[in-house]
Length: 209
Image (cartoon, rainbow, N blue to C red; front, side, top):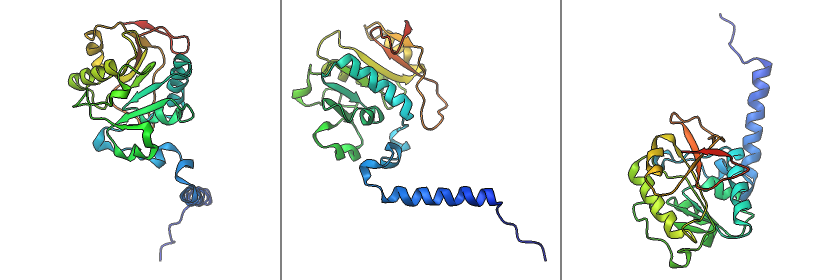
């Protein structure tokens, strides 16, 4: 009779550690779980979360520019999560799971770009956006929303999107800088992503497109 095939002691230890971490995680209150565990990506909604480092980088830039003022996050929940301690950060998002954040959440469908609460029109000091689809139509409609939410025609924008839609930015009437910083996602994506600003930044330097 053949010997039973078993796991090595190292593999068994790793497996036990995994089960222990899973059990501990289930005991955590919802708000203490890692963001991507608290709100798993829904690929049907084209959700691909940033790494914590990328989300924090965008959050730090937004806080620096806003200087305490209001920040809008359009279709960028992981950046919003990194801004939770900033009381004037608000999320505009299609996924209603994020209604968990109460009045800091606004349901947003890019197909209805002007359908935002009147109180938020011309309100925000900086806009962070990550259009959910890499299409000309989606990018244009999200930009339409950003224009509506921006406090002025010169309001700073941070845009993270696939490099394939860069031509849409060139046609938007605003000047943009392509950041040297490369955003990273928890899951490896096939399409290259880039970050764009419509202003110069020390934290996120770049060059004009």
